[in-house]
Length: 286
Image 1: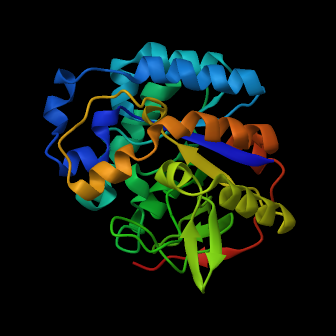
Image 2: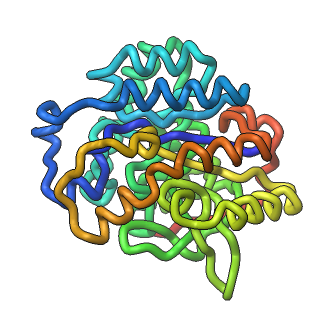
């Protein structure tokens, strides 16, 4: 059983948009397209009889309560994506804790279910922000999916384990860590687990990585964003590299997602963890 997840945020709330000059203070002035994208995502999942985990941004929960209620009513798992989509390197430990508590309360009030999972905006638990693991453990979150075991200009811990493991923070806090899917080639980890990688890479490569995970007895974590199923979204001010990452092959997201769902068994993180083992432990130093 593999894991399917969605980071629930608007197209103007990405790190690429922030770096292009879109400020949190201006979010309310942009066209909201998330409700329509969620409708499309939920229809695809219903067609395939698949449930998924939705890491919901607290801002979305505050301004689009009906969207969160709709996701929960369809039987999907609700998890936290923080409040403001600020990368953790921009927050203190106390600010992060406040965001966790605020987002969790909003999501639990709307869904009526416990929120036990977290994913940092832009996978921003890195060596520099490993303290966040301790905060998550202290706040009694069951699992995290924020550490990408790759080398990237914005995020990643290249030597982190590729599979589910118990992550130990610098202060000894412990939490289950679920990295996005990678493929091993030429001595490095290659990101294949979703997002722009799903839109850019051949689907045969992604399917091969999933089959290798199966042979290793490991569930694969796949992630997407609802805005990736919206090729008609407005063009925002971004650097050339960021615009490419954000917009490349948006029209291919839906058929590629449907292809993966038709070939492999996906479910929520909570359901997959009920069947998965977590034999390894990794310490993350400050």
